[in-house]
Structure formats: structure tokens, C-alpha cells
Image (cartoon, rainbow, N blue to C red; front, top):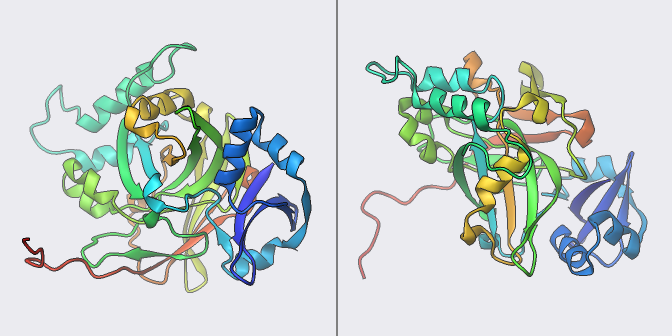
Length: 331
């Protein structure tokens, strides 16, 4: 089952089930979060909750996408209660481009960078036996729900940004139940969108480079994730494809198990607040930046993977003006 959130022509929110070119609307439901919490309280699956509510024939899916009516497939009415985070160096091959960014003279451990150390720890201990805790991955914070743009929309790029680069990834979508237990609703395509030029200056700037807008969706795939997934990441300029490359995901292409990545996120008590939404990016090994591509305003990103339905598309736009130097006022 694949779910979407969308607005009708009057701006009213709905949840829909994608059935080919058609969307079936879930009755009496305005958000995926509401649907998930009801399923948790009833102690049954998300699919069972949809079936219990029933659906009715809805709008044409292509029309919703074309008109920009598709919302992220999971959100929170209060953006401060939606946490966006991610883990890096999780995919086989993901360390090479990063290592080139972070190599400097005078490295310790026979020239091994911190990037390669963490990647090595993952390959050696990122997939522990069931019930055991594996190696801790790199973790980063992107922001709250206010930095999420809907599928099809442009990413606002701040004036101080040095790069506007895509990162094609899978995301895990979660809701925390009333008892503080996190529940995974499923997975969605994601564009984690980062500033790779800033990160390349020094790996300690990675935290800064991740504080950018992002997108995920348009569809939430409910259920287990296939172990091997192969998709395409493209950049279009003036309608023409200027770069494209296959990206791989799923546990067969990762050096960490999903369970290990989830454990090392939700082990922190502050991430177990009832009712909160968590969107977690699982990482990638494919970047246009690593191939020397320099994006520019007006470019369009397209991330596609057959198992996730419609592609995730976003553009590059202009961001809000930052607070000026010296503008902070004392009280």
C-alpha cells in the first residue's frame, strides 16, 4: 500500500491510497499522523486502519502532482514536533566521495581520515546479530518540519550557501505512540539536499552543511523494505538532463542494518515524546557533486525508484534573507 497526503481545490487536507493513476480517498481522515495514532491505539496495522475506515474514489493522481497539491506523506500540524535527521556513511561505496572531501595532510592512523574510520566501523559492526547493538553511525540534525518543502516545490537556498546539491535517499517515517514507543509507518523517497562545498572545507562543518531545506515523498510505502533497490537520480536544466546516475539502497547495499540505524536514533529519550513525528534519512552513495556538477537556480532534481511510485521532483529557488550581522538585540 502507498499513501499520500494532498489538498483538494478548496485547500482541505486528505489522505489517499494510490491505485495506479487514481487516488482513493480515506474516509474521515485529514492526516497520516492521525491515521497512524488511531492504528496504534487500536493495536492494529496502518493498512488495517485504512480498511476499517474505507475509501472512496478520488482525484486523478497526475493532476494532483501537476498542480502542486501533494503534501509530504507524513507531517505534524505543529512543525516544531516534526524532527528531521539522518545518518551518513551507511551505504557501501558512500565513503569514497566523502573521504576525498575530508583528506588533509598529517592524518593519523596511517592516513585514515575520520570519515574512513567511521565507515570501517560500520562495515565491521553495522549489521549485528538480531537483538544486539551494532556500531554507532554518523548522525546529523537537519531541522524541524519548517524546513520541509512539498514534492514539486523549490528548495529555498540561503544567500550564504556555497552549494545546492541533491542527495537521493530513502527515508524512514515514524510516529511516537502515547506510551513513548516509536512506530515506523513505512518509507519514502527523499532528497536530503546539502551544501557540499561548505562540508568540503572541513568535516566539522558537516553540521552546518546539513541545515538546509529538504523533501520526501510523494508516496509513503507501507510495509517492509526490499533488500535491494535501484533507482535513478537526475538533474534537469532548461528541460534537458545534464546529469543522471543510478543509486542503490536497501540493506543488501548498506553497511548498517535498518534496525541498527533506528536503534541509534531512538535510543535518546528526547526522541520519544508521544505524538511527535520523525523523518530519518538513511544515507546515499551517489552525489552529482562528486562528479563535478555545479547546480544553479532553475535546475530541477528528479529521484525515481519503481517500488515507490511517482518520482520526487524539486527545484532550486531563492531563500529568505538571513539575519544581518550585528542585528541581534540585547534585552
